[in-house]
Image (cartoon, rainbow, N blue to C red):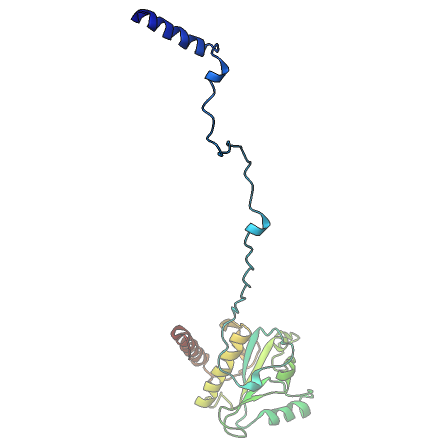
Length: 241
């Protein structure tokens, strides 16, 4: 066969294959080797229960966001349901001598009240030690006060903590020990009951009276409160006492 004839035969065979005229066995690929399985499609599956690792959720720790309470006397801590106090009302006794017991007697026998009207009394050294804080009988019971009735309005009795300093501050000044004790007491109460500074008031700011006297300085009191607050914050920044 000439070269041209061979070329024509090759072209003709190619046309037969492409046109589908070749024998079937000529289009099948070589069989797989012995022992090798032909590929079969398997659908994808998700993880089974035994494949899934279940982790026990960690308990949520509830943080106490309330500020730490300032130092205080054990007698100031109450064991009953607390009253929602909104004010702190400062008084002077307008007497040179006094104590919780003597004022209780006066309130019962002169005013006709059932007990001492104040919640706290701070001594001046006359009948109790200078700067000593006495807890009145109303406080442990969280009973309303009888110290600041304004006309017929009992707001400051119902929601105000009454603190009386022994002394007449129209004629004299509170002692250093009294002011220190007052700042410590007020600092605890304002933090404990979240009472803002604007609600720490003198009796005469809401009623027609000179109480707690012209020689009592709220500037002095608030300066002491700021110092106590700053000292607590400094301790907190150091991370401990």
